[in-house]
Image (tube, rainbow, N blue to C red; front, side):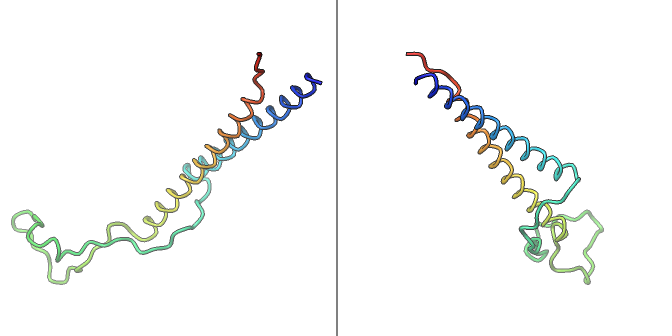
Length: 121
């Protein structure tokens, strides 16, 4: 009976190892497609980009001699356009999700490896 029990543990171990590796490969492929521009990250955020108030900078704004801000200059300036800011946020969230998925696959594969090992006592 002992060999049958070990055999079923090894089968389960190899199955978990294979499942973990598949999860890691899928997460890696999805992440590479987004990072290399083959597809877009899911839209999680759609927010306004942060702005800097030029009035708050006050005297801390060092302009070269002879250069003055025109009176028609906007009082607030966006750091990045909304599209770029949201794309960066969405890619960051997608990256974190794929790293979580890959670490989950590594954990599943690790459990499979532990089941494959034969403990001799």
